[in-house]
Amino acid sequence: MATLRNIDPVLLETFVAIAETGSFASAAVRVGRTRSAVSMQMRRLEEQFRDTPLFEQKGRRKRLTGTGEILLSHARNILELNEGLWQSMAVANSPGLIRLGAPDDYVYTLLPDILERYARVFPHIHVEVTCEPSEELSELITLDKLDLAVVTRRPADKVSKTIRVEPIVWVAAKGTRFPPDEPLPLAMFQPGCVARAQTIDACARAGRDYRVAYSSPSIAGLLSPVRAGLAAAAIARCSVPHDLEILPPSDDLPEIGGIDIALMRGGTSQRPAFIQSLAEEIHASLSAARGGADSQPNIIG
Image (cartoon, rainbow, N blue to C red):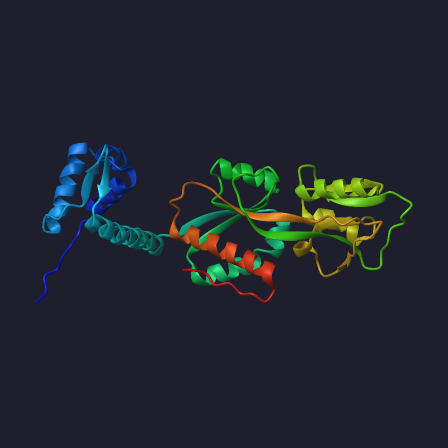
C-alpha cells in the first residue's frame, strides 16, 4: 500500500516568498514570521526531499538550486489550487455580493445579457448595481465602495485599460432634420461626460453652430427631447434605441470618433473567485462584441 506523502502549504508559502524576495529576512516580513522560524520551515521542507538543498547563497541573496526551481513551479500551482478551493468553499457556504457600477446607458444595453449568463452559473451571488456617471464611479472605485465598474475611460486615466472602442453616432427622431443655417439643438449628458466634450470639440472644429438645448445625467432624460424631435444627440452606438434614427456624418453633423469603454476593479489583487469570474465575463463579452455581434463569450466558473 502506497504511503501518503503530504507537504504543508504553509511551508510552500514561505518557500515561494523566499524565492521571490531573495532573502529569508524579507520573506519573514511577507509571511509574518521571524527569520529563525523561516529558517526552521525551510529545514523541514528540505528534509521532506531527503535533505536536498533548495537554495544556495549568491552574495547577499538566496538563489534557487535546480531542485528549488522545479519545486517553485509546483509550489505556486499547489498554492493557487489551495486558494481556489477555499474561495469555492466560501462561496458555496455563504451568499456573495458584488458591487457593480455602470452609467445607466451601459446598464440598459451592455450588461443585461452578461448578468443573465453570470446568474445561471452563480445563482447564489447577489449583484448590486449602482448607476452613476463614469466620473463618480471612478471615485467610488478609488474609495473601495465598488468591486467593479464599467466606465467611459477618460483621456488622462492611467489606471484602467480600454477593452472596447465604441463609436459615437448622431441620433434623431425618425425623419427629423435640422436646418444647417441655424444652431444645432443638442441634448447632452451633463458637463464632465467624455462624449459631451468630444461632441463640442467636433462641432467647434467643423465650425458648426450649436446650442445645448437639454442636459441630463441619465440616458432616459437625454433621449426624451430627441424622441420629440426637439434636439439631436451624439451618443454611444451601443446605446441607440430602435425607435431613433442614426444620422450619417455630414457637413452639418461632424464626425466625432469613439469613446473607450474600460473595466475598473476595486480593492486588492486578491479578489474572491466569483468577482474575478464576473470581471472575466464582462471583459470577454465587451471584447467579443467589438469583433462581432454574434460572438458569445463563456463564463469561467
